[in-house]
Length: 91
Image 1 (tube, one colour):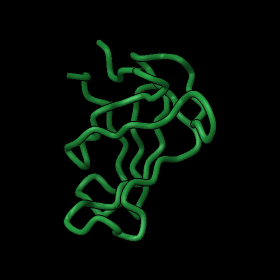
Image 2 (cartoon, one colour; image 1 turned 90 degrees about the vertical axis):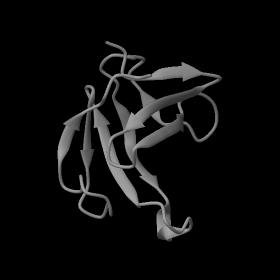
Image 3 (cartoon, one colour; image 1 turned 45 degrees about the vertical axis):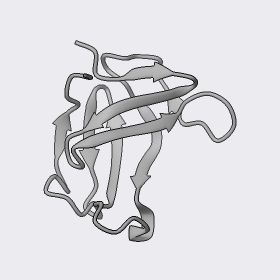
Image 4 (tube, helix red, strand yellow; image 1 turned 120 degrees about the vertical axis):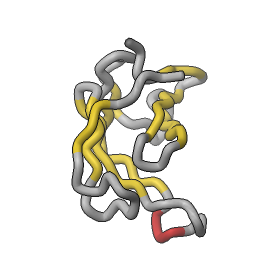
């Protein structure tokens, strides 16, 4: 089961908290560290989406992706804050 897709130096996965895709640079300048796995991805450092609520109506999402799991930190503003869940299958 593929949980992420890599294209043009970026890794995308479906965020079940935001119910949308997150796309993270994994090659080049300012890239996250990635373990090169599409089935059990690990990304470092944490991922922070919509910092300072710059996009009104979209939740703040702060997480770690480790071994195919996404750990939502407590400062996330969606229903999965504080929980760890499996990354869903990539569509």
